[in-house]
Image 1 (tube, rainbow, N blue to C red):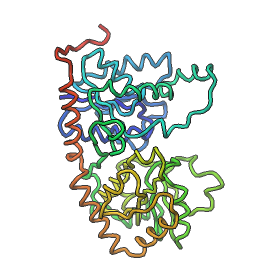
Image 2: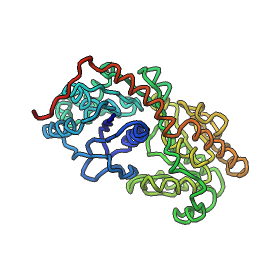
Image 3: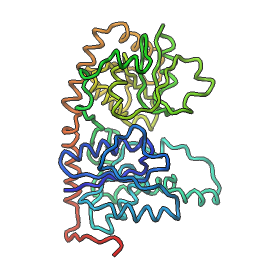
Image 4: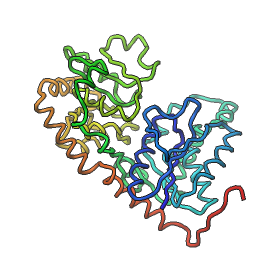
Length: 379
């Protein structure tokens, strides 16, 4: 069996969910991951894999060339479209119509909730339709989830909203082995000294980075390490916080970064988008046996039950106290991290995630038309 996974944008961090699904699918099928990539190339953390195939990103009317190129590359038995964007779900539905192949829609965010749509007049709205990532297309395709043969989701709240099979992000645990990393060398490489709290995610308001920065600033000697691009955290408001800016690094270097930190923080806020989203980096931190302090939002209380510290979202006092407690009690912190790794190995390895994904794929195959036929693109 061959599975084609479509990502709407290989240049953004959204491709990482597609990559995790691809790793899980490779446990039971041949896999290709395809999608548009902008001129600056794929997302920096995306591993270079021979089964990842980008196409040059275009706007309409040239995006039609992307559509034909992507449909031509959809030579599998099942299509998994990650997020209801035009270049992923829209193309998957078109490819399905051409090839009579079922589509699985994967929903890992409430993308419409996370987007900030500017006020536009009609002329501006029509011009915006030239962009395949336009919110107009996203809105229409979000309403068309019923066209998929099966749905997968990354959190229980998304499951309650869209139905389908819960498929956690999980972690390729064989790449995250604490014993294989020289922690002191890693700390020297990243310039860490003294207590370091790591925020391993991308900068988005709902991720609670500002409350985290305020909490870390209240802990004597502690510093906050953040992954960032060159223009991130350059505003004057960030100068008051003890930041260590770590450039976006290859995925293969993430274990070293996690090992170098003393504690990992996942401080999601209590917003509609955050309640439905599960941060991927929590699974990586668990695999590296890191003590984790996280907000009690989405499925984080379930995933970290008994193996992480949970605080009320946005509560700077609770967050400060939990971080300080972990930093001041390294033995207890180590035990907490070991429990987190054990949980990850048991429930969130790629073979474990693959079991859930296979259920959705089998459901899609059962919904396949009774008399399938393969169309030849361009015939």
